Length: 146
Figure 1: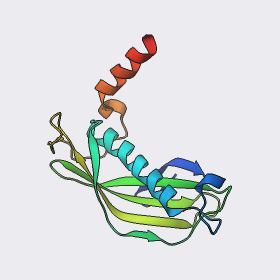
Figure 2: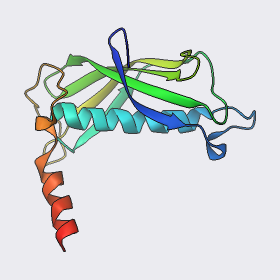
Figure 3: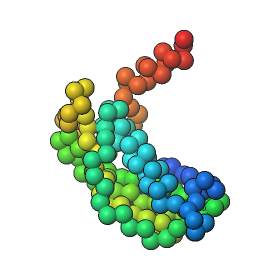
Figure 4: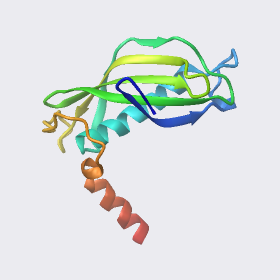
């Protein structure tokens, strides 16, 4: 699914443990899901499992979701810096297509083995698995084989 420049890749089901005292989706649960989704997106775009959240701009909650609703989360890269990736996020209700929130700017920083910002060398969005960090693939394969 796409809206403008956002592709909605991830869906979540709003369950009882995700609700606030008003019986609607707790903002903290939603922000945790977005940060996780943004981290995965950054890892794939930068080809590095060592990317960290640096910054989130104003978060604009425009509606909520109720128990049983399905929500869709979408991200798109808006800028590749030398060591960073900036993206935009949108979350919407899958049933009503109503926007739940937008975050105009989420910045992730690519880290080197020393834990410091490191150049990543990318300038364009990819939907190719070529950038999936290979060191993580090998670790998981070894764990399965033993």
